[in-house]
Image (cartoon, rainbow, N blue to C red; front, top):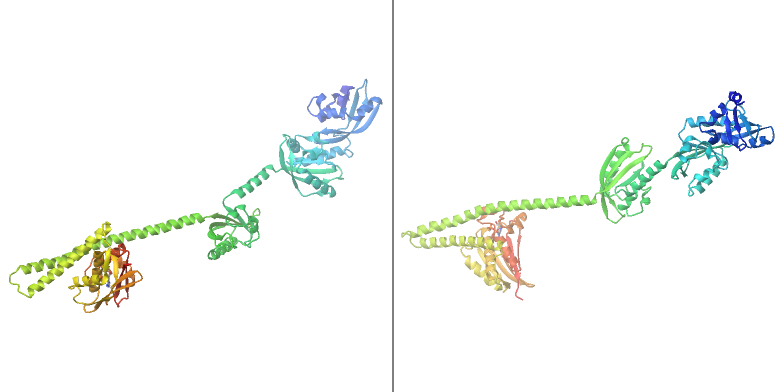
Length: 591
Ligand code: ADP
């Protein structure tokens, strides 16, 4: 009989009295697959059919059995016939059975076609959420392949936190036939891990052959992780990223914007990109952004702008802004502006520039000083040689016995004048080097300025001979070093004589006012050019016109002012070109 049954086109299975499949013909084995008869889920399902048990009490029972296959449950019409003992012969039509009436095959054909075209996980659910079918992809990830998942509630696989949302969604899906909007939730996979999936549900309840909800899902765990990575990346970068629309309104800003704008990041949304920009940088910014907006996709521009932390705060930060036109990029749809705070960098650069300028000015000053020193040495040698030549010349003449009076007296006078001139020059040089070396020791006592002026005028009678010298004033008494005062006054008087024409007057006035004793020397010379006023007190400096006017070394006034300051006083000049100069020495007065 078995040989006979092997030959029929219908699938035949023999079940023993303990409901175990013990034999199957070729057709049934083809349908059942590889596993041994005793463990084959297909044959076990046949053996477990109600019809098998019922057939044992009667002769033959017909019925419909749902049988597990690789593509889910299929329905088969079966005929169970009682054999000897408790064995039962079950036979049913395979793919060769009556096609029009076999809904199982139809479903299988549809599902197989569907599976062929998708790598998505596909599950068919009953109205109550029971899994009726899972394709291979769904089976692989959930570990519940094919028909094994049948009878399990799909909601068991959904993360408890997502369940209420998904249940609500499922309710709304049941209300409408056809596809619904995709939904995301977490699904438990075979290894127990949770995966983010995006599911599309197509309500085909009542549709002949399927009558279920076709759920197609794909794993978006990677994508989600990627999105989260990007989000946390954006939240943690030091740069600021701002997205602008075509009208330059902010549509997105990373939270890092709080580093420059003193307000919650979201308050920037909808605002103009030009808000808070320094007025001086506005035009530049508008031009740059307009240019980049009107240029082609991917064009970029970089500007440096100042942004105010809080309107009216005057706290400006320098930002380097790079704008890229991605308006026509469908994933961005905007102008992407990357802002980097460069305030510190700019300040450091400014400081560096200022330090460089200072150094440069210093170097220039030193070079100038060097040049002046060279000039000074040349001048000193020259200036000393002239009176020295006179001294030598007059002395030679005087040695001759034929020189008679009054020529003799005149020569002697000239010799003394030249020697005095040399002495004052040498004195100045010695004072200068003593001052430079800090070796000037001042002996402070009271100095009557009127007396000091008179003595100086008397001592310089020869140099002042060509001028009309006037002295007036009250008894101003200074607390100072008498030698220092004499030095200053002589210097001022010599200069007044040197730099004003013969025949003009030199006026010396002594006065006292609130705690000071003053001595002013006023001449009617050419005066001092405003550009030279401060410089004449510098060492070695001589006004360009001075060399034509008189001999000199350019250190007299420098020494005089330093003496004045060492004594707690000042030496100032007021001069109008063409109208003479007035040098005023002010010293602390006796209390
Ligand atoms: P020197 O007279 O040896 O050149 P000083 O230090 O005494 O050096 O004076 C510096 C410069 O100041 C002079 O070269 C001259 O240009 C200017 N100066 C000084 N006194 C007068 C003055 N009374 N009138 C005009 N220029 C003056």
